[in-house]
Image (cartoon, rainbow, N blue to C red; front, side):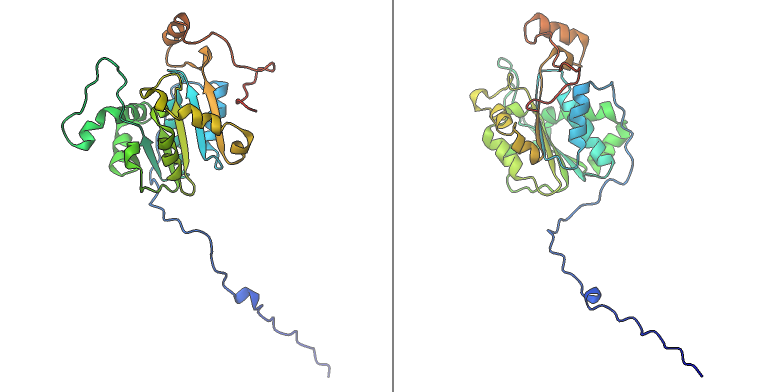
Length: 271
């Protein structure tokens, strides 16, 4: 009588029973948005805007710096990108950072009465106007009520720590170099910052550090680390209205020239 040999029972690998310790950095995350935003875009993007918007949405991007003339849709692109990131679950919160500087030399209001929120209302109004361009009113109110959007003056940044967030740094030409360093030092894991401003127009004179910071990170080494700089100073960059394009060209603020290569494809500066 033949006996069939039995195959030995599989022996569990000791390695498979070893639980590896997770040594990665722990990042606390608040709940992400639990409803879909109805984002409406108001116009077709130029080739340059498409390049910038794509880079804003890239997962490896850390800082986008845009030095652009009035009406070139700097804030528009920043808010649009931030909403898209929020809607797709790639960011958990939007922080709007702007210095409370008055723009007029001859009609300064000075210190206003009321609560801090009431005194800062004139500075965060820009953000709310942009949000209302993109979203139905009910969704704007819900984002604010649920804490997905927060306005912060740079003076209140020390001690803060932003993870998995998007920072919209508007009117960055009104930041000193130390302000920009402070903003950058608050950026934790999976956080990106959009610094947008006009180096030819600021309310703090020589104290502005925007252009200096722009020049510091406008090189190949910075691009490899996720920092990208763009200039928007030509007639074709102005999308606010045809009249603004005419007026700026008429007054000599801009030159009516195209920033395109011989192949008709716009390339970021330094590429």
